[in-house]
Length: 435
Image (tube, rainbow, N blue to C red):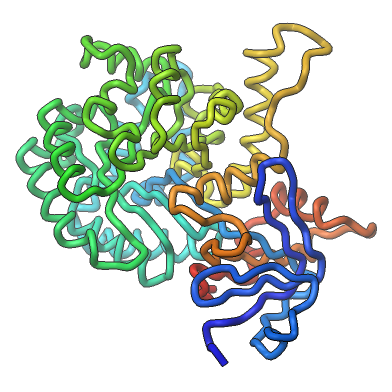
């Protein structure tokens, strides 16, 4: 008997398409090696003797992909979201983010902080991540080590910042590129499932010389990239002042192969695209938008045009954006994405028509973004279709139940709105039980 073959039994739900859940109540999802063999109402006779994890009465869903998070910001989650309305764009960074990140020069501090972050992340429904670290190479390597040890599939970025930072959290251009090259050499094949991702913090933090140097590293190592794009109107104006010859914010990445030309690129937020930027994004087949609805509410008070991106064929996944978002629970991003889409539709598309067609995201579509949508960055991930990576999360929603019978669709909706890490009963990543 192949010890790598096993099944999970329970109420199985996934979204192979954005339009609807496929549900097997009391069914089996089978793992062979690291991938999904299939989903069955009953095990075929050829599989009848395989080990079965019996989660009868519990919900079994694909693992979720958090494609935008800041690991070093976890310590001050829940802070800074109630700053004065008169605060400028940089206030949150100057008071919270940058001083916190500066402390990761101390490996002892990084050890304690990243252990807590990865341990808490393990107890969520997240199985795959795109994670920002800091400018510090050693601490970034430590974060990668911890994510790998806990079984995650992750891209991790050592930040580049050779301008517009604070004392103790800045690099010269030469230092930034040399440390990034060394980091890539040390980590590009160190782990099977935790990989480096080139990560200029955003255009205002990197000179043209730095971006050109990173472009050379992209071409040398062929690793993906991540950054932030068009998050706030004041940020966009800042980019215009720094890069006046760029036709749009996105062009400041595109000219350096960081918008989905040679390698995959994840750009967070994308709340305020111009028409020129939208057209550019549409042409980039390897671009993923990391939609971070809670963070967008906190920082800009507005919602990204997610429906427009989806209709244009642009890849979209969800991000927690810890700590501009206040929780690692990606179910919160699922429900916030639905509400953000409603707000965008009402303010930007309804145009006062009481009978306008409702084009905001459904719950099914938002769940798809958290699973298969973001998971597509890794190819076949985020679904229980045959051949997909076997990432599965077991949700015990018994404490959320009421006195009436509920359908599996109703139960997963309620779990999305009410559950947290206390309700995650088990987790599997690439066929390995990690929780």
